[in-house]
Image 1 (cartoon, rainbow, N blue to C red):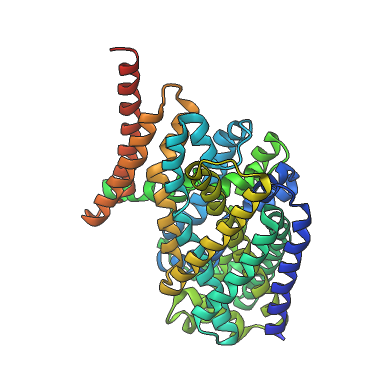
Image 2: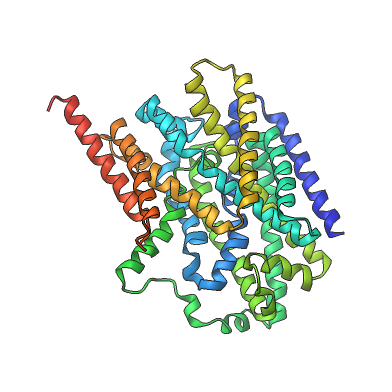
Length: 461
């Protein structure tokens, strides 16, 4: 019955995508849902941005190992990203009427920087998509005993299919449905497990006090590591196409801003449920924590709960992961087709041709990510790596381009390239300090110095 329910859910999701495809007439419809999403759909879409494998699987297992201090990156950093995006970026970007985030770099810095930015924007998504596919493969492995790689392939086919046909309209509509299932499913499971354990107070009383530590000790290295944890998603995901496309799909600038705020609150609130559920598991079934901690939650549900709860839980889990995966596939496909292929080919696509090219790009990124997912299995690390790449190369040119009038293409180029090179050097020669801190600082100084030197030359100084 559980297997039948999962298969039915996957089929219904694909059918929703096919139905949503009727709204797709142009590339703008495919990438940004025609900029027509109301507050409810837009908020659900932004809430679902990261509420996937890293929140349910990755964060819960990290929480069991390191307490609240171990999950600063997600969910706290992720919620911070949505809050900052709404406060400082959504309105300004919405007013520019852009199709992709790569278009911002073209408008602000020129065609050459558009190409450089596109190279940094698209590839990080491969690891992020792979993380979601790994999670779905793990679910199918737990439920029906499929090898993880087989589950990865099946999941990739399903998500790619409805993204391919329906684009952002399919993602937005399914996000709304899936968000409801996520909230209901996790809430019901948390209530049931809490009741079994004797109540919230009993569960929390059994947690060591140090697991609730939220702030760093008075140590320079630990403080920098703490800041880096906030920054990975908090700043690193601001210059990302998936956040951009979800916010820019709103029907107005005000909707984009308020959707970001609502999604931030929703994300931080609902993301606490998997953490609490993991504490209930530790209290009730400590034996389930041996082995892969990422599988503790699904294994516990499968072994210790009744069929209706299993259906609700795995339905909510699939919902969370599929909603994240679909937009993660569309994001690099949009960048690749709009900001790499178009400029390199140098010819004007008709809108119909561009729509076909974007859909083909969806297939390409899905295939590459599927291969990576079959080779790697640590969800939290895959997600973390993808966000760091955006932070050290793109955050500074985006933020400075909006808030510093003197920022120019020379500064943007050196900011992207030197930031990334610095991160690579610090990763290769491990210093024990968080590599993204020096990389981001180098990106910032390169932006300032490069822009001022270029300005001086232009003015004949």
